[in-house]
Amino acid sequence: MAEPRHEVRKILGDVARAVDRRLGLEVRDIPGQERIQVALSHGSHHTHIELAVGSVLAAGEDAIARNELRLRLKRATDTMLFKPMPDHRMAAVKSVPPPGGQTTPRGRGRR
Image 1 (cartoon, rainbow, N blue to C red):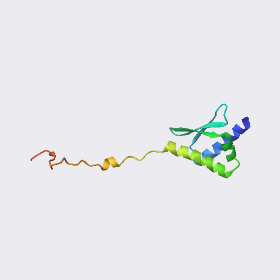
Image 2 (image 1 turned 30 degrees about the vertical axis):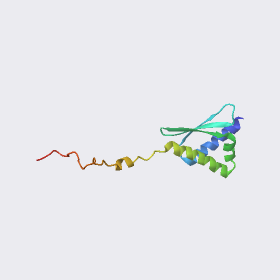
Image 3 (image 1 turned 30 degrees about the horizontal axis):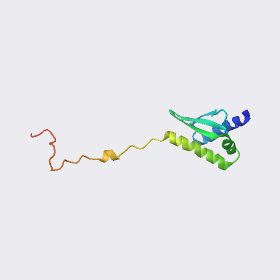
Image 4 (image 1 turned 180 degrees about the vertical axis):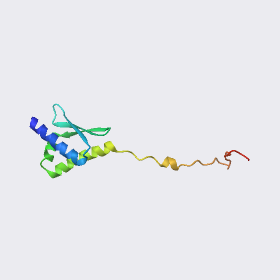
């Protein structure tokens, strides 16, 4: 039982290095299930995903399954590192003078 778990850790380590060399990887067994929890970290960012042991073992033998596993890890990593763009629409909004053409005086007055 320990041999497949070791193989799973090796495959995940290889695939994680293919996604990003600085990606930290921690694999935890889920008791009573044929699933593992993978904790990914990159600097101060962290995320978790769960994977079936069978799908990871299949990635060791099949190139298509390996690419699917790589895409799952890459998707989790990209989501973890995503920084939303600032909202520039608020900077483009300008104040409109009040109706009736009356505006408040600007400046320091007469000189």
